[in-house]
Image (cartoon, rainbow, N blue to C red; front, side, top):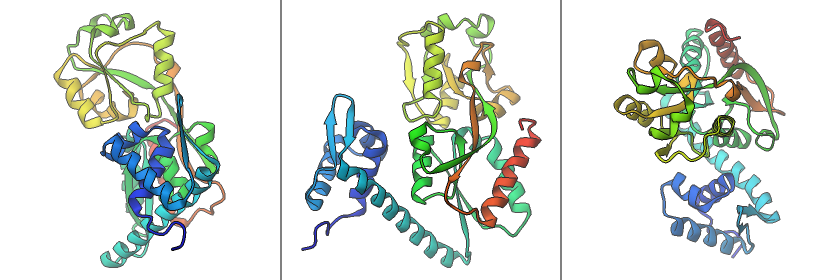
Amino acid sequence: MRVGSGIKLRHLQAFLEIARLRSLTEAANSLNVTQPAISKTLKELETLLGVGLMERGRAGVALTAEGEIFRHYAGLSVAALGEGIDGIEQVRMGSDRLLRVGALPSVAASMVPTAAGQYLEHGRGATLDIVTGPNGLLLDQLRTGALHVVIGRLGQPDAMLGLSFQQLYSEQVVLAVRPGHPLLRDPDLARLPAFPVLFPSRAAAIRPQVERLMVANGIGRLPKRIETVSNAFGRSFTRATDAVWIISNGVVANDLAEGQLAALAVDTRLTLGPVGISTRAAETHTPDMLLFMSAMREAVSRRGLA
């Protein structure tokens, strides 16, 4: 039997998610499985390959040298499978081109709808496949070819290896609350621990900036803290309670404009960060990619952010 035969898609998906998050627990939560189940899947993969792919330590899970090599090819394999499935779907639907766009939730709720509308007006572009998710996951999928372009925040240096970034505008977080919230009368961040706080999870692109904001304002433990990247939950929970939702401005821009939510008058300039277009550095941009990127720049210009 050839070494590695018997490897299934679930083995690759589990391995790639553990490698991305560097944590068995977080990977299990992301894939909606138990930690024993994902540990068993990883062990099965290592047995099939005959090598150890990961080592556990106090700082989390670290890839072995073999694991680093396998991560590259596992990512390419999953991406290739996805492209094959997309190709079948395109034939079934009568479409011959598909442009896969990853969008951070903040831009998916603000800029991307305008850009998508303008892109479709040309009537000659590829079919758009727009997906949202954490910035790190989207950049990983871009690197392996599962996505053609990502609209989001500039990633950390290690996350941007092999990628190119073109800045569109800068964005900061807001502290959103329901209309009539007690903190609107006295927006003192020192009072934040007294209220439920929706905090960006570890996978969120804005997490480091928000943590710096808390430190800069002398805020330590938040006893009523909920970590989430769910915009649907955040919007519903904030409207119904005295929660304070720490979120990118783009996610709640329409809610603020319509008066469904209000922003606390606090200084969050410390969280300001670049938002732009990420592509693979060595890849030649297709006409479809160029058309969509142009539509994104136009959408930003219309908002007066360029």
